[in-house]
Amino acid sequence: MHIMKPPRIPPMAVDIIQTALSAIDGAVFTDLATCPYCGGMVSGYDNKTRQFAVVEEQEMRRTIQIRVKRFRCRECNKLCYADQPFYPDTRIGSPVVDLSVTLTANMPATRAARVLSSVGICVDRTSCLLFARRFRQDIRTAEVFGMRIPFSILTLSNLAARNFESGPLPGSDILTACGFPSAFHAAPDVSLDKRNNRDEHNEREER
Image (cartoon, rainbow, N blue to C red):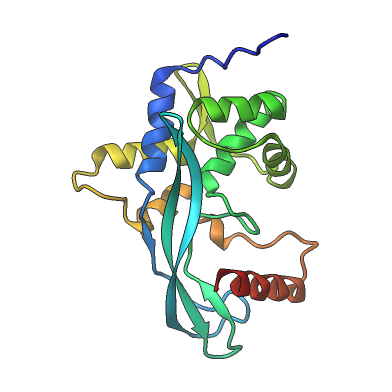
């Protein structure tokens, strides 16, 4: 039986990725200018905990979570979330998606998933394939210690290194580093009605 060896990842690259994700754990996102559905004024409603990523540390899995404020639109009465670092219709933080897409652009999805596992991020092969197909826009990357890493992760890691206060980075800094992915428009084949029905279904699941 052939046993596949784990990918060899530069230790410094692993540190950069883990530092970036650790700096997000517990971050709070509270800002929303207007309703994303109709452009109306919004009022604070409640706060929700969202899963950002699942990481593995010393063979133990841990969930990185963030807190996101929800609002009620005064015009259309829909619930909507504060700006947050997620691409549309995803449940994994945008920096993790960026890294998945970057890896899958240069290797098969199976190997990309193994590389993610080697740096302590739990994303399966199917998710890597899905992200690669859905998010084909150019993701800015740089080669660091022989590995291509998205700018979103590099920026987050640099911010974390300069953060003299203990605890997560401010939500506004995280959004800037991630390029405000929550403000991206939905895919062309997703109609407004479908989006509304999906969001209402997700809200019922979260209650």
